[in-house]
Amino acid sequence: MAAKAANILRRSRLALLILLTLTVGAAVSPVRAADEGFSRFIASVWPDAQQAGVSRATFDSVTAGLEPDYRLPDLILPGRPATGAPSQAEFVQVPADYLKEGSIARLAAEGQRLMRKHETTLKAIEKRLGVPATIILAIWGRETDYGRYALPYDAVRVLATQAYVGRRKDQYRQEFIEGLLLLQRGAVSRKNFRASWGGAVGLTQFLPSELAKHGVDFDGDGRVDIWSSVPDALASAAQQLVNKGWQPGLRWAYEVQAPAHADCTEGVPEVRKPIGEWLRAGFLPVRGQKLSAAERDQLASLLQPEGIHGPSFLTTKNYFVIKEYNFSDLYVLFVGHLADRMTSPLPFATPWSASTQLRSRDVEAMQRHLTRLGLYKDKIDGKAGMLTRAALGAYQKSAGLKVDCWPSDGVLRAMNAAR
Image 1 (spheres, one colour):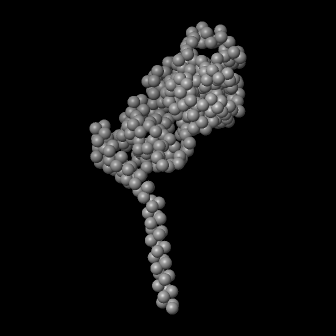
Image 2 (cartoon, helix red, strand yellow):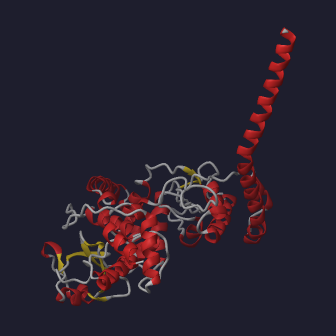
Image 3 (cartoon, helix red, strand yellow):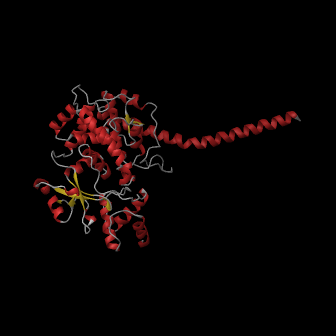
């Protein structure tokens, strides 16, 4: 009887082991398939990398054992729920959260200290390139907290993953190859090749292709090093601005008080008027600031980051140059205002409102509806930028709603009811 019971127990254990094996196999097979797909993708990059100048030895060494990171945001993963962080803070936070006074005041104080510490370098950069010390220090501060923020990701893994399943595959395929070239040239060690989730690297956060275009060896040691050379990092940031059209002596923006009758749908880059014309229309510089005749002649666009709520700005050509560094209005406002705070203690004259930010998918739904109506012709990206806000204002006008150019639950409900 005991032998029979033992035999039954062995058979039960064997059946359980087989069941567990099948269950685990079913669970891991999609991951294995995905990794095999990633390996095939890496292999498919080799011909382009070789044509760009990457050696076989470099390619094999860097990609050996490389695995994708599916936790990154902004990925397209069929059959999988969204993973990782939702998006860049610039696109999912309201201005009051992104432009926190405490953060700006702290960075401004540190920027003043660094301005004294790197005075010779900063003066030389401004003399050579025409970009103020405060602007490039503000970029450094915003990007990596003056180098104190440790970038969390392996750059090669980020670039390869974004090239494989990111929303901008073609762009990141080239960035991945440019990253391989950086390693091959010895610009940075594999260990120190760290990045943001979007693949930007170094003290002043360059994508590899941008570094190839705008990198500057300002310390004269024969290599462009934006990881440990402050002169190289700051000069490269300045050079990128210059190459994108920076105009020396031109402010980035002027904060103004908008008149009650202001049309927020005019807040698009295409509507550019001399600042004097904006002033005659009732837009008044805050705190009684007086503008020179030359400043009044400058062309500017209206920016209202929260629609009619919160501060308003008249933005110059240099505003949009900074935006080429990071395509976010909040980013430019942070950098521009931080730069101003290094020479003036004054915060924004008009406080930010306590508005809430709709989820990206709700903004996407709005953009699709506005596109169907012919009011919006830009990307469906869930980001409430200038063009989206202006299109919302146009919709509010046509629907008889209050015109505030801000994506709210009320506007979304009105759109849903109209379908």
